[in-house]
Image 1 (tube, rainbow, N blue to C red):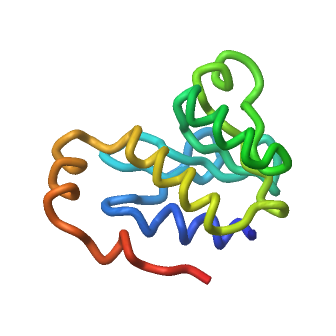
Image 2: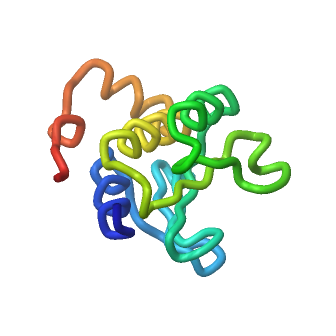
Length: 123
């Protein structure tokens, strides 16, 4: 997976926008960050998971998913090693991060009404 693949996936979620934080591109919904590119290096990303979600993704593929160092990692922030990553598993992790971050009003709206972004396919 490339950084552009990751960017395209992150932006495929409803109301997701790209911004920047500490000189790294990030992806937000409702003004809150759910993913970041380029940390700790150019081949990495960070996804905001819960600690339980982080554990499950790390068990599925420890080559791809690792906790961010320190307290952020203990809270569920998870590094993604992009060269080893496959789009389907990263899409799942990004969906979880997006749900964890999405304002309640948006999440409720989406549960009632399907959107094209949920069914969009990236190859």
